[in-house]
Image (cartoon, rainbow, N blue to C red; front, top):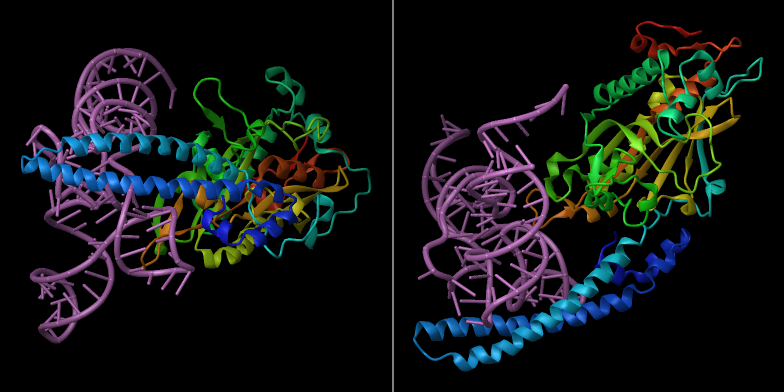
Length: 424
RNA sequence: GGAGAGAUGGCCGAGUCGGCUGAAGGCGCACGCCUGCUAAGCGUGUAUGCGUCAAAAGCGCAUCGAGGGUUCGAAUCCCUCUCUCUCCGCCA
């Protein structure tokens, strides 16, 4: 969410910024509604002032045993008028809130122009894709042949787009989770957390999934709860409605959670394998930072996510999302894409974003500077560190042998009880 | 699931019969004084949001879990909801 005052005073700049991502029309009725709201508010406050003054007067008269009947009668009308205006104000507030909630974040100036992922900007590449002497297989084929992945049974249990891990497969997934968490907590200074996997509507609104993207989420039939699509939601909302102090910042949290996405509208895309599931595992990194350091924090966040791939010796590249591909709440996002030889393509495995104060304003996460009056909004950032299922897939594809067995990356072997090879 | 108690500022905590209570008192914090240093002591200040203003000051409005009601006027009375705690039941 953007600030009303800031919007009012910088309308043309914001318009231009939003146009970069093709979202300038979300501003359409803002000015008119906002102006109307202020007019009503001014009138309402005048009347309330009158009423407050009269109430004091009545109290004084009653204390002195004077007759206040006339005054009380007159105030009856004022009170009715106030009630009417309050109703109008409430309606306008709701409208304005809906408008504000639908305006995405303004892209950072360094975000490249562009409509879709074809115009994302390549920042760097790491590692060299291995030259296979044979045609590398896709991870689902390798996994099923080894008996460590079973999509057929998963479909029987639940439906399409679910995975069942077995034996060394489950072990590998668990090893990856522990490996990632250990690095982030022991080397990068993150505090480990296990948040709720179900969250309420307010939390989803705070990070920007709601109100616009409800169809992407799984919702419970009973209470008004949603399955988290990412740990970003519970972890970022951890400090909602709080006033942190300057010396608390920055705060780093990491969380392993399953993630649930309905993947509405993705029919036909990545229908096989671990790439696009309704449930997948992810280790998430979340930062709360001072406004002046958030851009440095984004760079270090990216490095921290990259570390995992480097230790696993998986080739990858980093792209900056162009404005048209940028997520709703984000000011700038780097995607890390891992090399998948079985698909002859780079696939997204992490997304690192700076939301600046956009989520903080929605979720009301503030901080106070030492010796200074008033509060400021923190900046929030998050990144996958990493998507576990996709890392699993990348390992299978990059470390496959001609006979279909899989070497275990050296860094992971201690987490696999010393296992070096997954074979039939 | 059944029975009961509660929700007030950064924290603790007071609020009588509805009327100078945005809210006593304390802690914490900030600044100043005092002191050889530390501790103690003394004084002053210390919520948030919004509107008005170029901005600040000032002024105004709102906020005592949330929403609604009664009233000229609600932290105080009534209703609904949420959350927390205690006891019982159930349960990993």
